[in-house]
Image 1 (cartoon, one colour):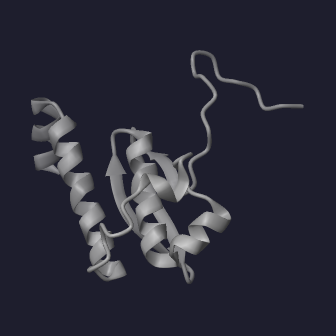
Image 2 (spheres, rainbow, N blue to C red):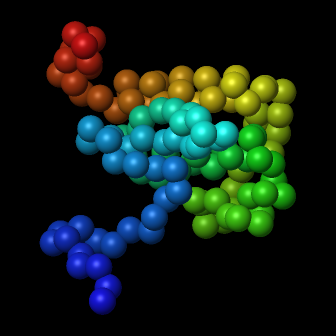
Length: 118
């Protein structure tokens, strides 16, 4: 028996490494029994892109071609040289910074004020 659809929510394709968390979308991956946090985004697809970029950096293009990525275009959707000069740790920090910038831009003034108070 197929899973029931929730009313008002169209069925969405599962994005690997992307989870709903506190009304936002969290991207993370697991490497050697370690949870690597990549950031929170307002949009599910943005979190999927962050996961894809981190996986490409960590595991390489050949792995991505074999196992696939969240983006339906696969490896061709990304610039392979984007993080070439960075280590994996620097890539993760870059993705986290992009997540913060993206959230800040998309937040309303009221949301920003409550965010500053935390």
